[in-house]
Image (cartoon, rainbow, N blue to C red; front, side, top):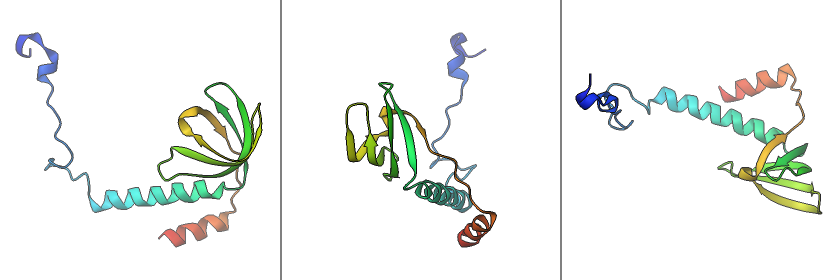
Length: 122
C-alpha cells in the first residue's frame, strides 16, 4: 500500500509533453496528421456557407438563418438573415456558448469531388 494508505501518493505524475523523453508529442507525423485534419475540418465548414440552418439557444429559442461562417477559434458563428422570435437581423454574430444545437442540412458530395479533394491535399 502507498504511504499512509493514500492512493493518490502512489500515482506517478506525468511529465509535460515538452519534458517527455520517451514519446515525442510534437513528432512530424503527428503534426502532419493534425494539419490534415484541421484542413479537412475547415474545408467542410466552409462548404456550408450559404446554406440555411436552424439553431436552438440556451434560452430554448428557435432561430433560423443562413450559415455564413465561423471565426478562427470556433467561438462565434456568423449568420445572415437571422430570424428570431423577436426580430429579424440582416447579419448576426452568435456565440457558440449560447447555442445548444445547430442543424445544417445534409450535404451530398459527388464521389469525383472527394477524389479531387484528396488529390489536392496529397
